[in-house]
Length: 388
Image 1 (cartoon, rainbow, N blue to C red):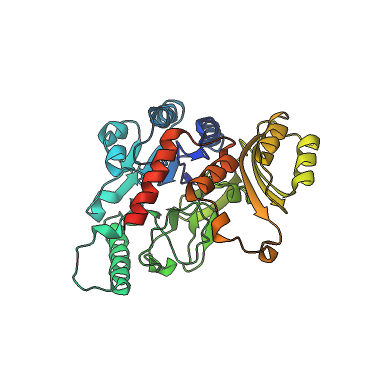
Image 2 (cartoon, helix red, strand yellow):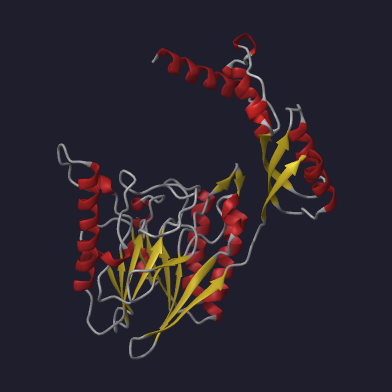
């Protein structure tokens, strides 16, 4: 049996207000082709299908169109769990209907037995513990409990939950554990929402049951393998870079294969193509503008870290236009003032008011002044802070 492990699709995600539906559409087309070419029997999606709990109609439509094509154009089964970005009820709503299309969705659960999915149902060849994101907020409240005690109680809950899942699986078939959580040793970026308690680790890799064959994780966006068990414990990562810093490493899916005698004989990485390049440029004004003139920026998103000796009004607009004329789209221009430590202090009488600073910041980021509604909102927030 061949299995493809993916996670963290984040359909509907925006990057500095740029809609990314086209990138997700290209990824899902590539994913479907890969499933067909690799003759995949089972697709695993380890949480964060959508970027928000209330995804747009366009994002929802893309998701269900993909599932229909998956059913119509392949013979693969699919198991999907909710992540911390998802609305469990939103995912769960059509679950009984989707089962008719070989698609199993687990969004809400209270009992480990409800998470166990065996494929195919009439003659199980593999068992899946499809455990969705389990929030620590669901733990019963205990008065005067320390954060460390709560963390340990949450960890014990996860350990026993997975163990109970395994106890509800058929014997003598491979067992895969799915989860959307932070496991100690994982490499964290700046685009994952923290799901730790009080800064402590949620679970250790060696907390997973011994009698399993693979752990298919979601939540961390860098594809990676963790140590701690004698079977693979892996994060598939997000299929597209969700921030500029995620463009520094390859995006992947994991292709697994179990033999007829239930041994894991294949655990391969498949690189996902780059559907839209995210570029970070750093340097002074002359360097950045010369880069704009010399490079091919067609269809690329660009982040500029501009080093300046003194602030110059309008430089962000000049940079955006220079790259725009070459087909690029500058999403942010971040000013980095040089020799800031040597600058003389500004007398209080010459300091800018918060409203002026906000206006300057907005112009730097977006190339225009904020509208009156946004200015009024900022003023009201400042008044609320001053009244406290």
